[in-house]
Amino acid sequence: MANNPFVPQTGTSTSSGGSRWITNPKHMPLTAFASTDLNLKTALGLVVLSNTAGFYTNLAFRGATSSITGAATLVTVANVTSGSGFLCNVVSPTHTASFTPTFVITIDGVAYTIAPSATIASGKRLVLGPICYGIPTITPLGGASLVDHFHDGNSVADAGFNAAMVGGVAMVGSTGSLYTPEAIINFGLPALRFEQSLKVEVMASLYSANAVDRQCGATYRLDL
Image 1 (tube, rainbow, N blue to C red):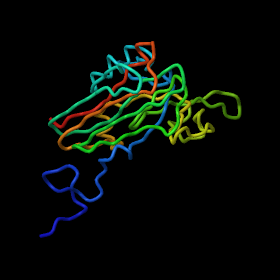
Image 2 (cartoon, one colour; image 1 turned 135 degrees about the vertical axis):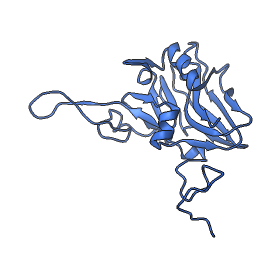
Image 3 (cartoon, rainbow, N blue to C red; image 1 turned 60 degrees about the horizontal axis):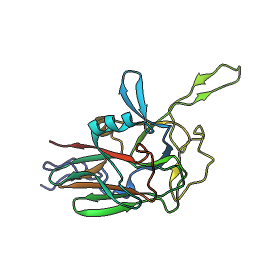
């Protein structure tokens, strides 16, 4: 009896018709946040911003972190030589001047280079993967401030909505948080599937004198 394309087949998580998982990193969401707007939840009511060392200390618990060692020089953030799982987010270094961040992601032996086609503004970090966006405050008729619904970087509620795309990347003007890999997988958010190996390399066109600016990281979840 032929396999039903609408029913996941045994033996693989990606063999069903219309798998929700992405296998090309260029199909993942790509946005840019100010370092002071990108955060990571660490405990009840506590977050750390990506312009602090604590962000990368906690990010390492969800994957791996590194620090660039020079301008336009690739550094390896994660290297899974044998294993399967999901890549969820990659976060670039930043600089105090306009610069170009670059990701080189090798999935099951195939390398993909991801970079904006123009320099992005100082203090921004390029983020690959899904983001939990902030909740804006609105003032309706009557003057009382209310909290609006969640929105994404393409919403008119986002302060960066009217800003131009830079090198094909949306410059998000509101805050954003990284989901945990478990939340991304369970909520069905975009995740990059690898079956045999994963390598994440990162670089920036400029090398910052600030140690935190040079830090970068990736979040992922192995099957075993």
